[in-house]
Amino acid sequence: MLPGGSERSDALSELVNIGMGQAGDSLARLFDTFIHLSIPRLELIEPAQLPEAIESLVGEPGPIVAVRQAFSSRIRGEALAIYSAAGCDTLADLVKYPEVDSDELLLEISNVLVGACVGALASQFSLDLTFSPPSVLGRTTIAELIDTRALPWNRALMAEVNFRIVERSFCCHLLTFWPDESISVLLHAVDAFLARL
Amino acid sequence: MATPILVVDDSAVSRSIVIRSLPPGWDVAITQASNGQEALSALQRQPHAVVLLDLNMPVMDGYQFLEAIGQSELARPIVIVLSGDIQPGAQTRVKQLGAHAFVKKPVRADTVLRALQECGVL
Image (cartoon, rainbow over all chains, first blue to last red; front, side, top):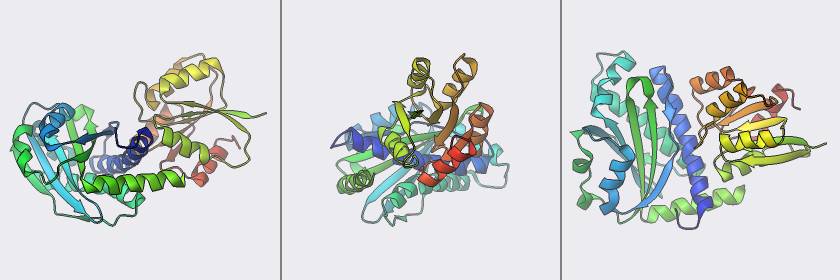
């Protein structure tokens, strides 16, 4: 639950939902297949809780591949796209471009998902975001992925959505983190959005 | 007589946006449901002329709701899907399941009006 009640969570979820729909549309067109979309989940989180929270959301005991991308303007944050290593292996078949390097493909997909999801929120709130180049954090586990000491925040709002291709065991969990002072900027924008309704 | 409309969405904010997007001056009696299951119960209690249906919902989603009314003995309402999931496959699937129109979220008064006109409701 966000500070200030369920209406804020509800509004933010709905906006995330619209962004996710746009991202899902891009992915469906790229792969020419149906993408199952999750229901967005929002959570306020501290660094120490992060490994456990991600493990329970992702539910992926095996090796994973992650792509990380930061964004900033009046607000800053970070997106983490998490794929199971097994699911990544099916990607090359899906796009039918054997000559494309699988890391390049992951970067491209992650870029599309982050751009659409975060971009939809940013445009709703008139935030002019700058994205850092995405980087691939190779085959690893969730525990190894998150070095809690290195996280540059004390508290963050985490939004999780996932994109699934059921018949190909492909799944991407997209986590976005809006840390510390960005939470209040985001909530202020949500309040302005609600006031316009 | 007021046209009975059922608005189905798990987000209260989204239901409120949908209700405000309906044509001004249109005499409607609105019932709200937060998932497909609640929507089915509402239809069992009272027939509705139009259902404005979200797709991505917990408990029973929009696809399951469309399947359920297709298999039921209930009077068939006009179903207009209002969805954040806008991929081509979603639009095809709901049409196959009997939905009459598809409106992309974020909903706007003009796209809702056009869908209502396309379905012959207005």
